[in-house]
Length: 199
Image (cartoon, helix red, strand yellow):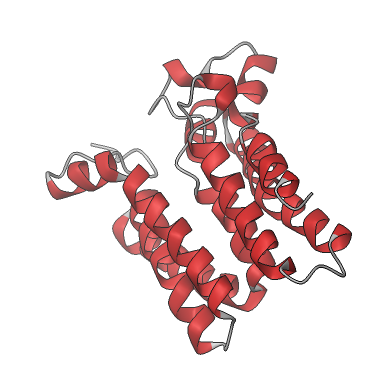
């Protein structure tokens, strides 16, 4: 029974909301901008409103499966572990969706949903880091990388459980791995800025 929840987490996480929202307005976001199905590319290609909608939907993919697991496994001995695993699987689902031949997004928004369940306080701190990093660097990828990497530290300082810290660390590593092309472009000065720079 317990394994069912991580499986559901994966299947929910694999729902490509960015692609679905783009298709609803006649655009395949996989062929525009950075060709990614995540909220950042949807925002870049389709505008702020649809970008925000994608962000909320992708974030919910991480948060809701964990909440449902918490709700239905109230008396289970390994409840915390199953909840954490469900969140990790939701992120993996977003990154490697079975519906799109395992070619998905970078997991930041879905990871945000997981982190939000684990600790709203940690998310508050990392959100400040994210905004400051994007403001100073001009790159969403820089903010995403720094904010995700620091969540395990905030959890540790806030006294979170080992399970929560390990789950957050795994998600942060996955996010960094998925951003390997962004990291290369940043190192070579070829990364696309959040806003177009006027000549």
